Length: 186
Image (cartoon, rainbow, N blue to C red; front, side, top):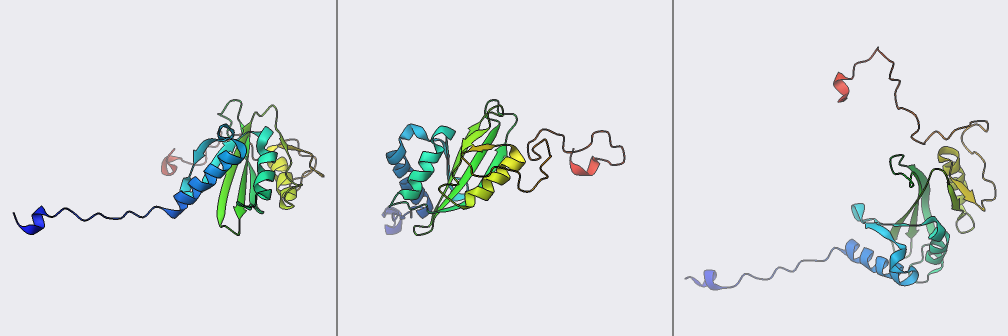
């Protein structure tokens, strides 16, 4: 045996992913502040910590995150509606993106609820930007934000009697005969 063969292989230090470490720390703080059972479906797509909670808790959670001196989620990046018609009892949802500019932490919160009861508490009293975004979500998805100061359509005409971003209509006219689907993978 040569000395090279008998020597143990050097230990390679594996650096911990800083985003995963930060997400684990934020998740631990979320559990500490609001309870472990409050959050479900914890994911990290592309390094973005994403948790699902309930609409009954969303206002208190976001208010707590905004006021927390360690996390400092003082900026709401966006708020938008989503529609999954195949998820019975959870067809509609709202996604909130919060950002801590001082700590450079991003967090995505999701809530889901039935199409028959599309009510969610407003957070326009916490973030001014939520006023417009909640109106847009109401306009396109029909989500009713209780406590909103002026929940009226913002982009579509007032007499529109449907919400165009809901997946209630076929994407294409099935009666068309002037096109071929051969090249479109259908």
